[in-house]
Image (cartoon, rainbow, N blue to C red; front, side, top):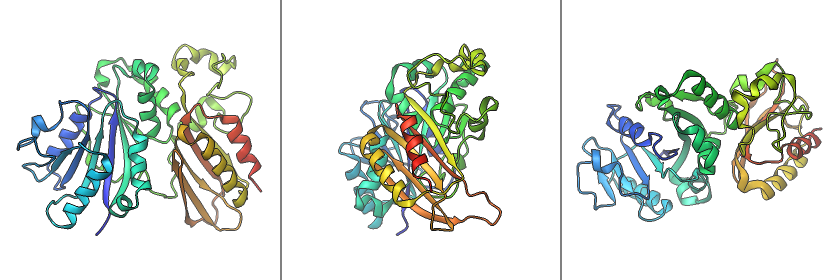
Length: 356
């Protein structure tokens, strides 16, 4: 049986997850989708759009989609769904897990990698995060869960943008790009979005494409994301930066220097020494794993003519051989790390020391 693709939908309370889900469920796309609701509240999607009694754990809908509310843990629910699909008792093409607004998507994502039985039935496709433009600044300032949800995202959808001014929206987009440069952002109106932007994004695919918003790397005219150890966007200790190119912006975009979820990029044209890199990454993940939300890289490794693709979530890390470097392609290693208060200097210097 082919693996069943799974999507994790997350976002802070009121960001519009249910609106987006309803749109996905009611659109005539011919796909049968199983929705797993990981909600604590009584108010959930069933009440509005389901056709049967909500006492059951799994409910078949009029258009063939099914919904279930997690009464046990996610693992059990996924196993039940996979078993029923195998027996032909339930028919669905993919799974969407809607997390509670206060949830950290990390453990949900890890379920797909840590449990062999789940890994044999499901393939985690991506984590989608909804951000409410009207309340985001406050939520990101006050709640670590909201910041973590942004850090984990493969795709960010911004809702309620019509309720804020253009400068406010731009400031939010700028802030989100600093927290997570690898997730494309899209402004949504009432959950209207093409399914191609929701499903089959392959955010967890070990593919050779490392998506980092290109503007993030060349921002402000000089390469912040390179290792200019002098000053960087993160301003680790919250100190003020007096670099002239930043001064003007401190009052506008840059009031978010104290976000604990940050990202940084490492790039080098020198090859990595495989054993050194493995030891270093192993040690880093051991110490900082819980604070490492997402990390991903396309690497130039000594001893192989092919790209090495690696990525991880928290303590779980995997790598794979990608395609060969093209004849005229610069063999450039690129890695992006997104995490909570990660020691950028230690990481960059450590990676530097793993180069040939």
